[in-house]
Image (tube, rainbow, N blue to C red; front, side):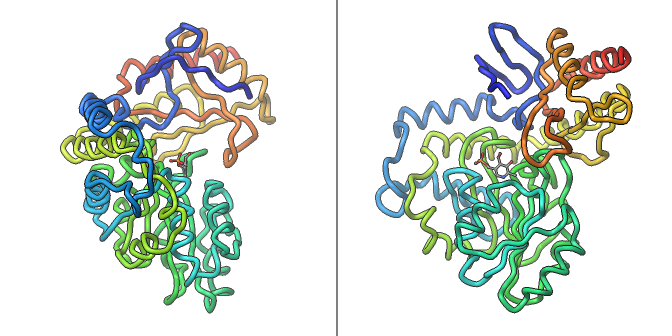
Length: 371
Ligand SMILES: Cc1ncc(COP(=O)(O)O)c(C=O)c1O
């Protein structure tokens, strides 16, 4: 699939080849990547610190901003502690390094983000997959390996299809001792739960065996990653994880921007309220156009088109092109974890207007009625 060459973007627009489209792409769920307070903080950080700390935080590369961002993340998610990593991808690596000494076995949802499997394997854990979204399958495996220490890993919201992980069931699947549940909440953080506190908050879970990994590059609109959870695990990662200790942290201007984004998130609960209203409107618009989409409060909508009873890539491509001609960018992607090789994956943000969403529904319906 040809990569896009995006010339400029906002939360709801993309410019490609000089043409501006209404966009339903990306994961800028709250529009924080363009929020003026966030941009001002980044510019301020750039002039105070330059781009890179040029060293690991454990030598000379730490700033109080990085320390405070960790406190912000832990406080907001109502967890004990947090540790920053360079990205969400390496956050999964760091948590696997932190868990591996006491948890020899990783049980991973069959459709989890690839970074999780890569992380667990690289950390030396023995990896098994359980059936997608199936706590019974996870519990069966957990019983087989209980004496070796078991960590269950899942995406919170699955990036490809927007499915919500059954966290209470997965928690119940854990053996009583030497066990952990790792929730990669890259798509739930800033979206689910009270004010965007994430999927663990959404399910009101409070259990010392849970830890969260996230990116700062999607809902928060910045860059970087974090592991968030109980202090002993975070201390172990800080003390022993190579991927944390031997790498350069998130650039300080970005850390400042992420602190500003967290402040906006805390002080503007309307953002997540607006996002939820837009999710409901987008679901209604897509269903009204005749598309089969989920009923969850998740801003990711995945669907395929068929010709008769067969999935039709030709029909999907024709629909994608027709939407482009009417000025709408509706991503037709090839990405692991989706229902088929190519599929539509649309996202809605808090910044879309009622008219944006209605227009998507109208244009899609017109195209689908054409057959
Ligand atoms: C579920 C999930 N985990 C991890 C990552 C990696 O995060 P980052 O892009 O910050 O490395 C992503 C990003 O695509 C993701 O969707």
